[in-house]
Structures are given as C-alpha cells and as structure tokens.
Amino acid sequence: MSPLVIGFGLAALAAILYAVAVALQALEAREAPARERLHPKLVQRLVSQPRWLVGTVCAVLAWGAQTAALAFVPLTLAQPTLALALVVLLVIGAYLLDERVGVREIAGVSAIVIGIAGLAWSSPAGGAAPPPSGILLVAIACFAAAAATPYLFRRHLRGRNWLITVAAGLGFAWAAQASKFVADAASSGAWLLLVAALGVSATGAAVGLLNEMTALQSSDAVRVYPTVLVIQILVAVLLAPVLLGESWAGTPFGGLAIVGSLAVVIVGAVGLSTAQAIGRASAPSRA
Image (tube, rainbow, N blue to C red; front, side, top):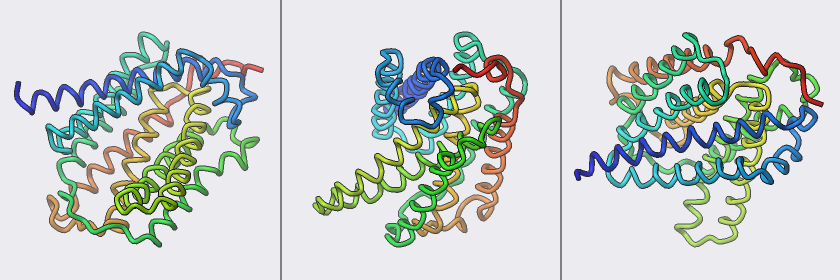
C-alpha cells in the first residue's frame, strides 16, 4: 500500500474520530443544568460521565492518527482531509443529535472546508524563524484575557452564545501558542521552564474546554465545533508573519490566495454562528 493511501486513510480516520468525539461530548454537555454554565462544576460533572470520557478518548486517538498521517503525507494534504470532520459532524448532527442541518449549515461547512483547503495550498512552505519570546508572551496574554472574558460577564451573556464559542477557540489558541515554549524547553532540557510552559498550556486548554462545553449546552455542535476550529486556524495563519517571520510574498498571487481563503473560511463560520437557533436552543433553560 502506498504512503499516500496510508496517510490519507489516517487523516480521514482522525477526522471521523474528531467528529464522534464532539458529538459524544455535546450529548453530555446539553444534559447539564444551566446553572453550571462557565463553572468548573460543569467539567467536574462531565468527567464523571462514561459517554463524555469515551468522546475524550476518541479525541486523543484522533490526535494520534493525525500525527501519524503526517509521517506519510505532507500537511498540505493532511489538513484539508481533517476538515472532513465537519462533514461527518453534519451527518451525525442531523441523524443522531437531532440538530438542524439545512442549506445554511451545509453551505457554511462547505465554505470552511474549501477555505481550509485553499489555506493548505497557498500557505508558506515553512522554514520560518523561531518566534520571539517577548512577542509570543504578549500574544498568549491577549488570548488568555479574551478567553477569560466570559467569566467576568457571564450574567450578561444570555443569548450571546457565539461569544463563548469564540472564547473557546481563543482558549485553545492560547494553549497551542504556549506549546511552542513546551517544545523549546523540552529540546533544551530547561525543566523548570518546561513545567511552567506545560502549566500555561494546560490552563489554556482547560479554559477552552470549559467554554466549549458551555457553548454546547445551548448551541448545536454543527455550529460550535466549526467555529472553534476556525478561530484556531485564523490565529495560526494571521499571526504567523508576526510570530514566525513567515512571508506571504512568495505565496500564490502574492498572498491574495491566503486572504481569499481566509475570507471564505470567515464567511462560512459567520454563517454558521449566526444561523437561527431552534429546538433545544430555544427551549426553556434547565434549572
């Protein structure tokens, strides 16, 4: 079997597992009472539920399959393939989660998939310089402040679930950027820095997770997960010239392909996040 087939198969498996993970976690999150919104008790409740834990295991396995795929195929093939998770989630949402999947949802996910494929095709080929530590720390601090904002104004966020979804994406972006310090510390043997960086990254992931689970309490998975994914992609692409010194000058059409792909991704995400909530989103809150 050729490496291309193996790599594509692993990436497709990762996409399916990611979609299953989100679906299982969404099923448990929507059962939690509204009073636990943006509260650590929400995560405490979820980690005690077997179905949610199975979803988490699926996410870990998906990450493993995604990493393995990169040993066989380039990122330019693996990344668009992972976007299949959004398509699989549409099917799961329609048939298993009892979520609305209409023209607007299909169009939004299609735009995101096309935009991600465009970004994979047009992005710089790597070889960038390491990120300046000072600038990276400032970026992480900004992500942390934005991701934590819902906790300060949670009494005023009724009907603004999209803000919590965006904060979830920023929380995971915070964790991803901090992981650069983890990698550097591990490679240099700076163990104290490694412990500190792991703590910062884990905190970002925890904040992102709590925001995401809160969003899933009252919004459909077919809206929440794509938006969280898009936020992370936008952060990575837009900050690469600043943090990694990447240049768009040598990319197709002098960077216009990247800008166009980003625009398509944003339009798809906005279309999903602003779609009218129905069903359980409009149902009375659970006490």
